[in-house]
Image 1 (tube, rainbow, N blue to C red):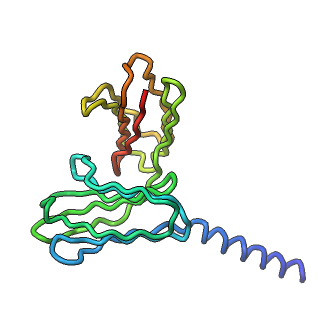
Image 2: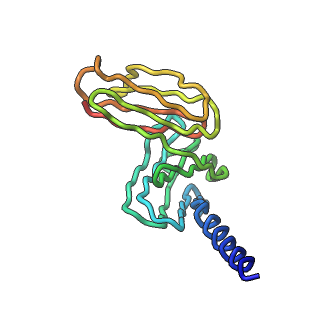
Image 3: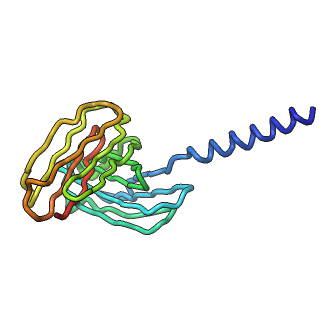
Length: 193
């Protein structure tokens, strides 16, 4: 009898621990007035955050990196940016939560939140290893830019696990931007040679 009780207690702790470990962060975007919206992010787990607002062309309109924290709030005024589609992304660790916003005639419509994993980049001399967990299993593309000009690119496929190596041995010294594009967003990484 005692063994059964202890088994039930241990199982209850295991289930409670697993449930709290899988709790995803929450991100809401609410229209406050006119073309102004408020972002509210909260998580049970503390992490450094990267908050980014981009337009439909992928141009970064706002970027902020924070130290480890569990909450973040920010007001965005779209009156100067105009009507259009925008993506608001909060990166926490190796994951991100994203929302697409449509701004039209002082009405802001917000998509449901999408969670995705961030790619992993590792530079070793003039080689860059890229790994990405493609949970959407949609096409993934990679492009390399210098000063806004596309240097090279490739379709990496739609496998769930994507690994590639970029050889920068033939490129001149300088700063390059690697952009991995998946179904949800553009992931950027800067390399200085």
